[in-house]
Amino acid sequence: SFCTLLDTLMKEIVTVQVGGCGVLLGRRFWEGVCHERGISSDGTCEGDAWGGQYRNHELFEEGRDGRLVPRSVMVDDDTGSLDALEGSSEGGLFRPDYAVRGNGSIGVWPKGKYNADTAETAFDVCRKQAENTDRLAGIQLCHSIVGGSGSGTGSALLSRLREEFCDTIVMTYTVTDAKPQEAWNPLGPYNAVLASHPLVEFADLCVLIDGKILRQDRSRDFTRGCFTDTASVMRAVCCNKTYGLRKLCTTVVPFPRLHFFIPTYVTARETDPLPLRCLVNRAFEPKSFLFPGYGKTPFTAALYVHGRSVSHHHVSELAQNAIPHAGPNMWLPDKVTSAIAESDTASVTALANDPKSMYDYSHAMGECFTAMFRKKAYLHWYLAEGMDEMEFTEAESNMNDLICEYNWSSVNGSCCLEDFEEEGDYEEED
Image (cartoon, rainbow, N blue to C red; front, top):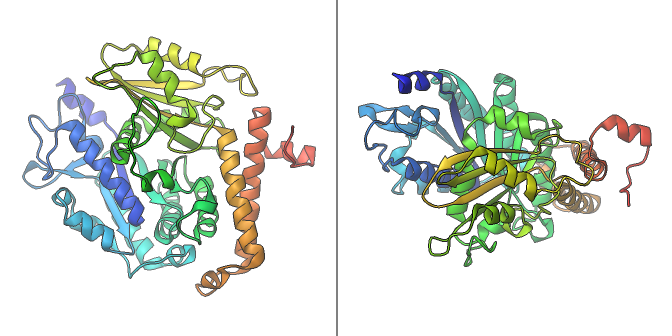
């Protein structure tokens, strides 16, 4: 049948959740997927699990008794998050042998990066998951770069995944602190900068999420840009990005190193539905972002629209009108790629490649890293794990390169390291 033919052509995605924050994000992601597709907490599905509107082969494999088992790998050195997941109502959905436990809390980047046992065990499980697929489309990694497990173990695992699956799209959902001075972990700037280089070199696309938003729980009217139910927002952000990873990367990443995106989510209230034009416009307003951003100045953007009787042409027209074509990036022919899904409630999820926002974030993180490194604050914890001060110097240099690239692209609308060398000046232009 036609559905069977589609299933044979469907490419699979493996989800890897590293660290306590990564396990939590992954848990919200799978809650959203199961809710969207009518899958119960034990993996049973009403009707035909492999037919209908959704192609579950993409994210699930068939387990015993026809149950759906997520293509998920969970890794954490502090077993508390994994124990909490297994004891929850969703615990029966996952396979216990796909959970990798370490030897206790890490806290610092090198302890996770050079902990060969945990990283190699996790990689073996990832490879096993990949071998169980027919056509692996991509790997998505959920983690935080503020803590030790998500940054260190995540960096080691990301390096091994890129080495083994060089032709596979690797996408990350990365939690960090947009304002490092407000970080919950005083070692956060060290961990974040040390983990940034692997993200630049080994990932194809990174979605940045402000950790402050995840730690807050306040009232929100999604139409006005105040966050409340973070779990719902994260489900919307992660679930919409699983379709067409290669197409997404090839259309929204104009420069290979500048692949950091800001997510946004806006929905209409059932009692007061808003026209789609308003939702699209508000999706690119700074108050709707899950990371501090400017909204109206992205290189490119990906737009995911849920609603009834919505056409691609109409959505593309609205998106092009929402982003002005003036400025240094006006030479791009089509800055927005869009996708549509049928839903009773209208909502808009977007990813914005905003160079100005990324420059501000990387500049603030780099300054904080440099200030701490010059004072050698907390440095002994890293040296005790076998690191050398030259590694900090190299990480600082790599961050400065990224800062210069984002600065140049936000001002000139292009990015080329040779341009920096020709100019011979890294200072920000007025």
